[in-house]
Image (cartoon, rainbow, N blue to C red; front, side, top):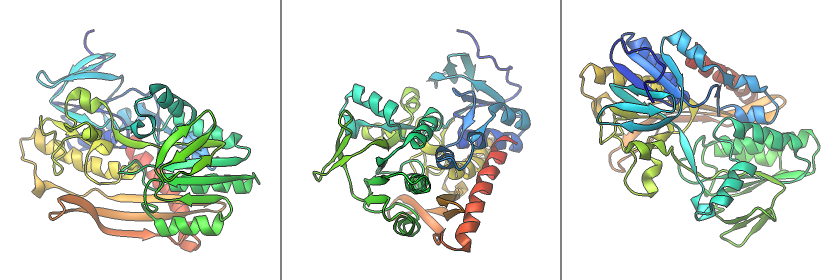
Length: 412
């Protein structure tokens, strides 16, 4: 196969793989910083659909077109090239990206391919079971067909137990499963369905905005939401619709959204920039202060694949993407990156707890490096968890505007 169908580079070329919040932001802001840089953004999808706000679409609060947007609009408005293609390999020595549409060379490569799911704890290598889980009970945290499946599940739900699982580790969208539990319960309540939402949480407590979500479960949905912390699944019997836990519990379900643990996209392994051990292949092996691969400084890994403990969320990836665009511009000009050039991304996140009126809780946090723990953690963090107040109603309005603001930043 020959060259990919993009114009010849007119300057140094940066190829960005993955047009999620991270890749979209980097492509736009790199062009804003340096118009002479040739930027190609690659994604296998023809249309953008966001994971953030998708719970409101799945439960019928917002229409599907709210979260669906045009990749080409971003390319037109910001002056980069968009290539709809699947990346199949990268030759680091010749600096060549190979896609199903042809190859192209780069000066800097950005890998922002998002997450994959890790079903291994539930399936022990049973690929038939994994396929059934993905097809019949998708997690719906990779937007697209999974989102549409979840929407149809909720619309068609007639009663019984609707199970939502929460994985351990740093999974995508920490508050997402709890928001989903609230909004599915809201749907059940509004439609007078004889059903329950059972939340099986691998963690010992709600991972973020705990006071707000616990209060919503207890106050709004006391007879609908059952929250089960520290619950590790040992077996999923799909034929009989029973989930078995390590403590011997058996949870029957009529329907479910089963969210396993996450790992970095498998493209990291293909390119050879993943951590060496089997367990840590879920992460890119990068300098945490520069985002550069430890095996090749001309490769940056961003968004959900980076190993730092930042939130795997659209807003975090957006603020991080602006910073990484600056790092790439500095790198192209020969400037040295390091701890002294590091800047913190920002996490601003709204989570709905009820629909009429729309009320939400929120978090606003930066990050800092702890030298003793050798890890990043929250800094200057603040939450608004009083959903049942004027602040909660304002946060509900803020949730919609927050989403619109992100879409404008990606595509306009």
